[in-house]
Image (cartoon, rainbow, N blue to C red; front, side, top):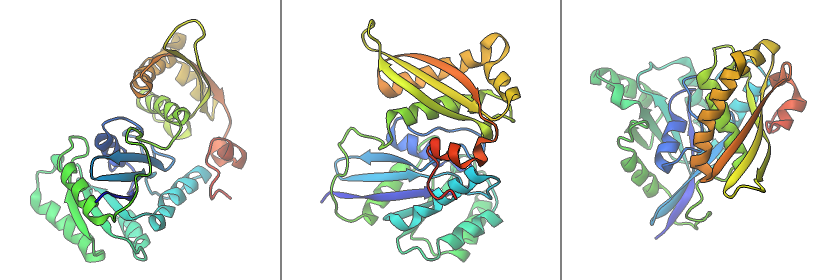
Length: 300
């Protein structure tokens, strides 16, 4: 009997949702960073084997919004809860229970589908007694259908988690071809891979205000197996543009070099990557730009 279904992964920022999805798929489709609020959209990752097809939805970290983009991100994460077959609440097992967790558990109280508690970063835990106390704290607030301790980074116990997800899912069709691992267009994934390199390489003032767009992708007319990609890195201030470019163009060159490697792995073809930096002041609070960059849902 073949099973299929949709599973959303929710949690606070930086708990490892994107790392888990990339590990399960064996390929990077969603970016990771130690900066909060790295994921901004719901991103679907498609896991398929002989027994099942699981469509995972990686959501933005749920947090108290400080601007319209933040409002969009939180709404995006929470709206998936009522439209899936299983909810995975992922937490960082090295962190203590907080008010943010209480908010998340409140949001789950009316959910009519099974909910798994996923304690990530178990490889970093040395105090088992503390971990048990943390689990008890969650259990006192919510009755979970399963509790799992994993390491998304190393892949510890992720196979067991996948098997238990399959047990929850009903018999169903194969929604996507076997070799498809995401329903997002290549342009989106490429733009996210570029943004990831900006997050990793630049100073603290840059990450939250940066956006990347792919303006054009085309096959090179003169060179076989070569894609020309033209992309823009968008920031909110002129000073940030200077940081992205770097002295003598050193920073933007480094961003391009690292991004090109991941894009090559994603697309399986040689890439010429042309990056430019644009300044759009306060774009995160402007409806027009939010809509233009794909953040139009639920933004008022």
